[in-house]
Image 1 (cartoon, rainbow, N blue to C red):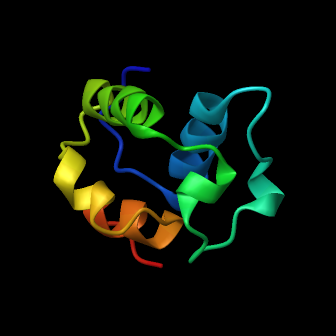
Image 2 (cartoon, helix red, strand yellow):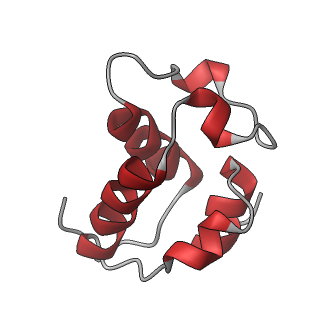
Amino acid sequence: MTTTAAPTRAQALADLVDVLGPGGSAAHEIGLDDDLTDHGLDSVRLMALLERWRAAGWPVEFAQVAVEPTLRGCLRALGVAT
């Protein structure tokens, strides 16, 4: 994905679901404060997600998300209001 648009909650969630893959959770199953590791996010998938966001022009570091592995934490790291 290549974009210069600001990140949105919808796009961040869509990217997360895509990275989780076929065995992961659907968007409607992921709550704002759910631990994403319970939905299948591991360190490899997290790196893939961060690379996708960086390619979109959304700079975010592993530690920013790892400290709070929730959708809310991801959005906070991206600067998106929840």
